[in-house]
Image (cartoon, rainbow, N blue to C red; front, side, top):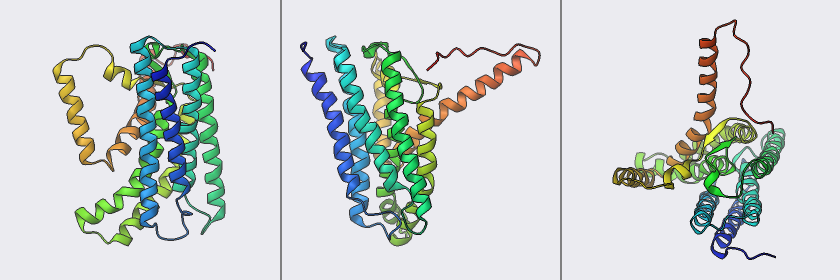
Length: 286
């Protein structure tokens, strides 16, 4: 085997390990719908979500280090996809099963949820395979993505897990809400939103909607002091509202660009007029 870059490889493997740890935390969560969420379940929800975020950090760093050291390779790309399949495919799909409705009181809803979780995993694997075919191993060339990136979709699911685990305690501490009522409201809200949200982001992953490479824009090139101040301010705000910030950030990223594409397409059609020939799609076939 050819020589491999040690540091980017270790970072990539750290991504996969974080995904595995997220699965282990999620596996400790009791059956949803069987009763009131316990403090132990809330703890496991939070850490399952955060280890998916940690996996995203490793995934971002391995590409950045590979670009700096000029060690991007096909081996690194394939290894990255295998670890992404664990952290951004298996881990969030397993979390969906825990976030949605349980066997009680309606077993059919949980069976439907299992189908959505399986579809999510399938769409993640398809998204990663398409990315490998369409793109070069060098992260420097990844300016835009076709379809929602798998880390972004996983972040949407992980943010719901953090919300379910932490938000009830925040309601109790800040607004003196009844603990049982706060937990029940948070649980029911996430149970309703998570299946629909998981189905939406799964379909967006295999769509042709263009998404920008956010981390590439943040870290690429030289930045002025104002950019650094804005970044630090964003980190401070996120730390102050860490339960709601991931939900707002990841779901805004997932939904904003499909809405933007629909609005731009509608605007182009209005400008072209009713007699104009239909516009050909610029996207490459899958």
